[in-house]
Length: 260
Length: 253
Image (cartoon, rainbow over all chains, first blue to last red):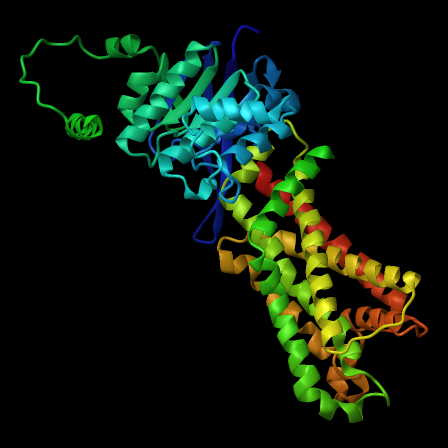
């Protein structure tokens, strides 16, 4: 049971109605992968590739049609309660309660997870995610980046060993993206296993220890960045003038402003 | 069970932070109460048994109307949690799947009872009086709770299935107007045949009659058990649909 996540032959199809005839669309056609404890694993794929479906099955929100999946040795279909104790999910859209304050949001999750001293846990997490100043503000008034941070803080409440991040940087500005990246790296350093989905290639390259590419319902490539690079013809050495990317320019200007 | 309590606390905070929902829910029934008492009340005298206080007579119908409009917010709150992914978050946590659903049901019950109390208070201001004893009041409370529960479960399914905010609450409009074609405002015997048959055999009439007779310390007749059967029946059917759509939504989005 050394794998944090183990997925074998996972299949899933959905009913869809096309011109009055009911069809079944196969979204997952036998997905296999494993994730080691403490690893950052990126599931890469375009929209509709089945990334969210995979996450929904692994987080017990959906049942698979075939195949098996286990988290920390617990089968997602047979022992969903054990699985839910081992995981937390940060969905595509920040699932924070807009009417509650940031602090109340974290306390809510702490109470639901039976974490001792919910107040203290909340204060510590809010500080870690630089939300102390906004702790008593309604989450509805937070910026997109702050909401994401709060969302992830809520997911860390109770320190589950495996964390699922479904497109964690979708809709964030470049600064917000960097913040989330930094957080994910810190988490992994502390031993948390992270499975994240993304459609941004650079995000997978920056963050992940291993990358799996989901396409057409199967994993078509799986390995470290170096391993994936070897799938391609050897690199040719070409000399190019390094132009700053728009992202670098943007961050440089913003950084300069903040420095003044 | 204590998780339901935590989630109930969350939803009650929503209501207490926007008390306008309670006021909005109560406003329309109160406006109708005032209009009927002060505008139509004088003309109604001939249709009613001699010596009837019209505010006292129509208050039970106003309460049902308020509950029917209150549950549209129950559906609305469920819809919001569905859209925001909050149910997904709770359902991937080690708590009973039913906790989140029951928290909404409990919140609906409590918030509607708050509206009911508010309407009783306004009723007192415009002339509602009752000399009923504790037992009769407990009966009134029981009837109102059962009605709220039945309508709450009716509200759960649209709350889960709706794809737009309007869709989540539109189902309540016909329910709000159901008291008009019942014994709530005028005796059904004054209505033309088709309406009278409908009015006599729809649930609002026995519920209103039961509450009215309890408050007036009159014998209940058959109305109380007919009302009870309606409430239990509606709850049972609505519950089955609600649980089915909740599980389907939770497992196969």
